[in-house]
Image (tube, rainbow, N blue to C red):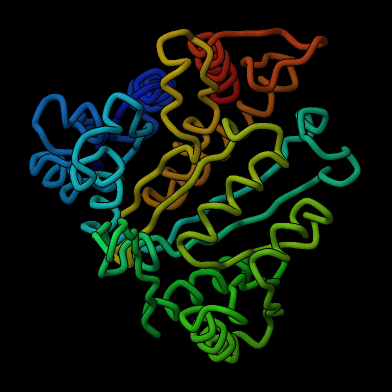
Length: 361
């Protein structure tokens, strides 16, 4: 059966890093390991330039007909001054909402070869393996009303943080199901002492936990969670939290692993559809210079194969190929040190492909 993959390179370094990931998918197809049909589309700033909107109808239609979406990155200063409602980031939020991608899985795994690249001591982060489950289509990023208005003699910006019980319950169940396949521990992060929306969050997560008696549940305020991620990160197994808190904490966790350029993500819908992307941004300052780290995007392909296409063997081979390249001492600039070999974006992609070919002979 041929599966459809929509590729959305996006902006900045997006096209460069996605090109490296496509090399692996093309290899799988050419060697008949899997039947794939790859289509491309526009999103973000590139879509604004071509079609005047950050998410063209054609892109959304293709996404709805696909088994999975591979995304690079969106945004950049070029579009910072245009009308807020059509900025690149609105396209990203829109496709998440339109596809119902409510569950964002962000693994923070430290490859042992990169222990020295972490900002923390090796003994603190060695064998680190955390899964952050972020609610993705609710909360303050989507709440209404929102905007900037004139209030008395000055302007006032406002956003609304709102969560329904059903939204909280479905993301909590994802977290407990994930934990059941890991170490069996869930830490729910909120700010229930200040925010009523997350007071409800805590109540609902506690109720859902009764259906998972073998899973250990802990609650933690977000400020303490941020501190604990730096102080003792290995205490966590699965973290489940709101849209905004998950956005912040997953970026913090990325630095425990050596670089934000190493972390992939999966955004999943109840229907089984998924969108896969590195968690870093478009990095327009290094776009076109061959400096970007493609490993997060390559590892996002691994998650795509695992979660949307049920091709765990192919996913495992990608993970092993990345690990071997790191063992060989190859590094892009963000993870480079004196004792390692500096390589470009293309060279890193080629190296992973070469190791993958060797593994699958």
